[in-house]
Amino acid sequence: MARIVSLGSALQDIYLIDHDDLVATAIGDTAIFGKVSVGSKVDIDHISYEVGGGGINSSICFARHGHEAIFMGNVSRDSAGAAIIRVLDREGIDSSYVNFLERRNTGTSIVLLDSKSGERTIMTCRGASEQFGNFSEKDLDLIQPDWLYVTTLRGDLDTLERFFKYAKKIDTKIMFNPGVKELEHPEELLRLFRYVDILNVNKTEASQLVPGMTLAELLYHLEGYVETVIITDGQMGGITKSGKEAYRFGVYEDTKVKDTTGAGDAFGSGFLAHLAAGRSFRNSLIFASANSTAVVSKLGANKGLLTGRESLHPMPIQKL
Image (cartoon, rainbow, N blue to C red; front, side, top):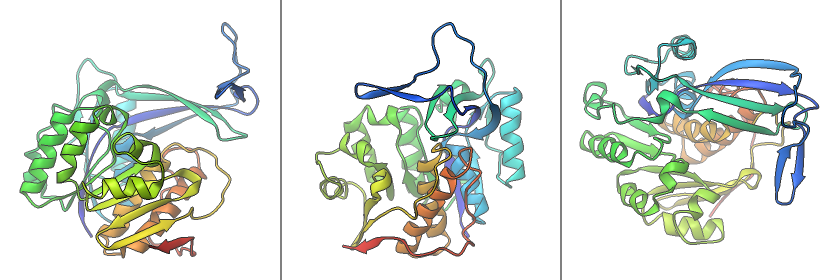
């Protein structure tokens, strides 16, 4: 098994769950939770406290797969931070590189969830997960990881570059799933891709980086920057290429969606967890899709994460 560092956010997710007041109502091209009006009091059916964030979700995935998982992220010494540390300990994740920030709250998301449809709106106060410049890339020297898995650093391209350069210096491979703030700087981001071994983006994100209307066009342009590119497209599946190996793939199976939070993290970290365990590129794609499907069938961003020991059925996948 591999030693994998996850650098990213840690959040407490507080779910407010209701079956009739949080109904999505269409207004033109957008939708709102139509039965919640300004000044009203709304009775919520259920509240659930979970943990999430890209760094936490991926670390849990790697640990459940049997890898040595190390999480690098910021929390505060508050109840939310304590809840996150308890989960890391429970999952067997190394938390010795967690930083505790003063005068900042641990990042928290309020998730408004319609239990009937699975539709949700997320309101997030990033708090301690708003910044990452306090981390030293030289910690990688002590850890000597096989892989560095990076989710959004809230647009901190300087920290990204420091970690990417150092990872390459010590022969650590990099998988990267950029976030909204990184995508606001496409030219700088494309320049950093020369350090990346695996890039995981969705179709909308890919179109913010390179020209193209179709998945094939987007893949063609991105493969000029990164050797292995995975582009997902929701229920349409996705497309990927690694060297001479390329695939179009569908979804693992149709399932009742309970909560889509963490689906992207489950796909990306699931792919790397399987690949780093010595599985084939193709089988890693199948596991990634199954992992994402399992997560959306449960409440929370990581409760449904698989272990890699499950028996999986075939899914639509075509070699190109």
